Length: 416
Image (cartoon, rainbow, N blue to C red):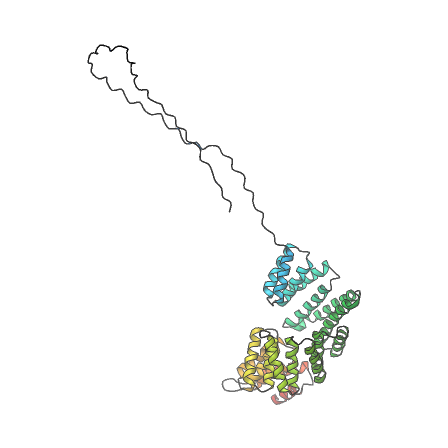
């Protein structure tokens, strides 16, 4: 804080001095004695001169120069946003990227980070607008195209009403088609990696559209272009599992674990496939290691719960599954599904209905979730009465997704 000082003026006094009566000089000779006279009358006191008021001396104070506010560069906010995003602190990343984009509205990196953070925070509409702005500023920016495509997909998945956003999948494919033209203009390994990203995202869109053949074809193209990438191996294995080819799925997931041994997603999914294949011992070992690698990773923790359930360890299953949905309540309907199955096994119909309702809401296109929700309503125990109408409704919804689903067919037959 600036400090200011002032100098007081000098005080000037004006006073009149009274003159005392003079003494006669001594004569050379002693004069005759003077006659005695009475003392003179006392003269009136003279009033002192008035004191002049204090007048400050004129002074010149130098003008205070304001210190300009220090402006933090937009690039600093972008760097902070990247750090927060990588740490999973998406709300803090959003704040940093937004500050950067406000300082520099044409900073593409700031807009890309802001758009990705908005997707993580489920602000899908603003995310699409932000990423479109980034792509408009730099039409040949491959990241802008890929992130925009992913935002369309995430809005479709996270909307709670996929049919209302089914057009998003077509928009995502259009963006990827444009991005492919940009990637093919690149040469050498960078071009191959860019194309592999595009084929990978395209395969995921095909999977959501229910086109397993095209999805596997796209994932294979991605894997051919970038054969040592564990994410591509994971996705290819996942697609084979979705089509019922457990052997091929295990093979690709094992390759993914070898390619990146410390990736908790690869190891946790591999563990589940081992359990489904009947290898409980190896499955539990892999699942426990995945959870140790990433104790706060909801997917790794949850798959440890799934493997424990499939292995018959209900206590560990409940602990791990509950922790997983606490870590991430919205992203893994599978864990609510297995919590519901566990509650159903134990006769806790209220708990089963609660968990399976969450599973069916978050994973509305998975017929197993709807079937087991129907089963929980078909049953009754104690104070919890059966609800045949809700049971029938969920069995029918499961059959709409998978007309040949025998368990749902049998459920409807029981209700007739």
